[in-house]
Amino acid sequence: MAIQSRKLYYSIAEVSKMLNVASSQLRYWESEFPHIRPKTNARGVRRYTEANIEDLKLIYNLIKVRGFRISPPAKLFMPSEARPVTNKNLSSD
Image (cartoon, rainbow, N blue to C red; front, side, top):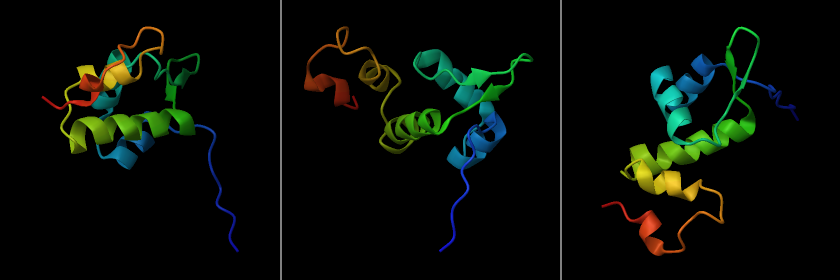
């Protein structure tokens, strides 16, 4: 039984390859979804955690696969007290 080695942090290039999107797309999503804030080192190099990657996969699915615009997925990631309670958040129109 092989034990799978997981890294603590992934570079923007690694995450870009995982999701098959440009690194500029990841930076744009960071600006649209405030909870996605990868750690940065002193030089400003982004380091994504597994949790960041899972969130990005969800965003990718909603926007690229299901065809949502940015605003409905962004509302899903708002703090619950600020989020409107309707099913319109998930409409793709």
